[in-house]
View 1 (cartoon, rainbow, N blue to C red):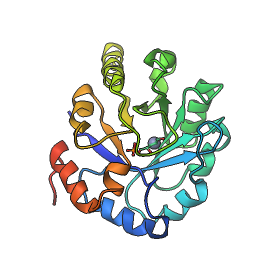
View 2 (cartoon, rainbow, N blue to C red):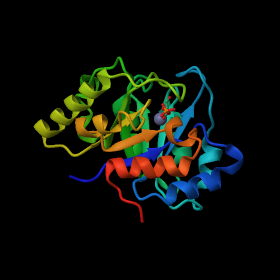
View 3 (cartoon, rainbow, N blue to C red):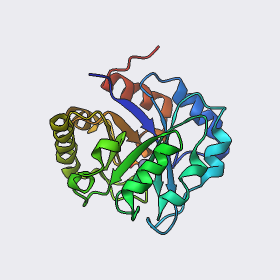
Length: 224
Ligand code: DX5
Ligand code: ZN
């Protein structure tokens, strides 16, 4: 089994120093992606940033980008987030009226597509699109804000998705997003999560570098 990768979210980073933040993340072998939380103040009750922020880092960062669109009708905006670094564009099952069409649109842009599930949405919401998704992102908080508490029922959802994937012989990745800390990251990995989004636990830590190293040891990346 491949090792789980961290996808730190820059949502709570110091936006005047994003380059330094990315450099810090790039020094940690367990970090596989930079996670961008795009919020529109409509699908979620908060506004974060849009494509210009993502585009300004593309080409400068080495890490692939994991774009999480928490916006109404994400199909309208997906193309704006395609950059040389973009690996995944993830849309919410609850916000794309025509989810199948939106996922296919993302794929047609030449990047991988992800489908995110709010805490109250069952895995079965993806029954008929599971074969075209590259990632299922299990929200372990209600999206909109960093720093919330992990919702334990998410672990069962991750296990069920892993079971559905095996039963159907599919190979999408399972991500988990929200409230991840050193106290629960191994539970998420053991349940089957492979892309671990972390926001406040790392970037709001007093020493983000030390926190990253501690996460790295836990999930077995090993520091260079
Ligand atoms: C939630 C976002 C997150 C989140 C992660 O709306 O999708 O990626 O802010 O932050 P923490 O780890 O602080 O929950
Ligand atoms: Zn996110």
